[in-house]
Image (cartoon, rainbow, N blue to C red; front, side, top):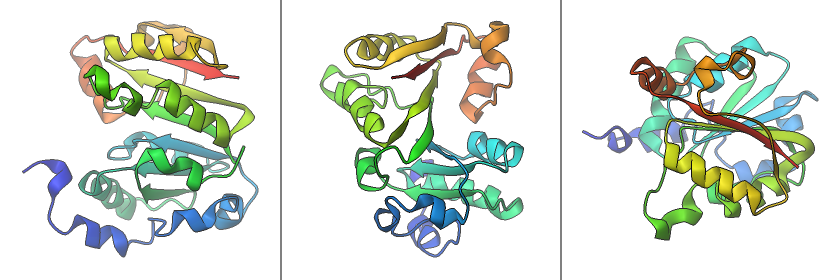
Length: 212
């Protein structure tokens, strides 16, 4: 059975206290939603949630929101949350294309993209999360002083991502083609499940940090 097709996962998500059921109603109100004035950090395509939950535990003064499209993947994150509840993290099941309907201009202070779907066919390029189309969406919701971090093991996707940055007003602030052998950029690095799997096989991890 494919992970994203577990029967009943949508029903569980619809009743879970850690999932924001009507996220569009919170647009412009996310700090009020969390009940504090802390920064809001967003991971798009959060998978099983290990990365974001680790950050949330390490940084109680930051509010974290994880977006995941697939119900059965999000279900795994909810199972982890029930074992270790954290007050500064919430999840949304949604398609990333709708983020400008959920977050107001400049409302997000940092964005993470980790091991995003490469969508290898050329006709699907605009669906790739580091594409210029998505960079335009991120530009709307990200605080002008904020930045975006992107990690992948996919060399072709990373090359594409670099080229897309050059076609926008974004600029690369830091970049590495072998994260785990780059002492400066790897400092404080939090690994995802995929990252641990791929790096254990000797695969280099690519990363950039961009801003405007």
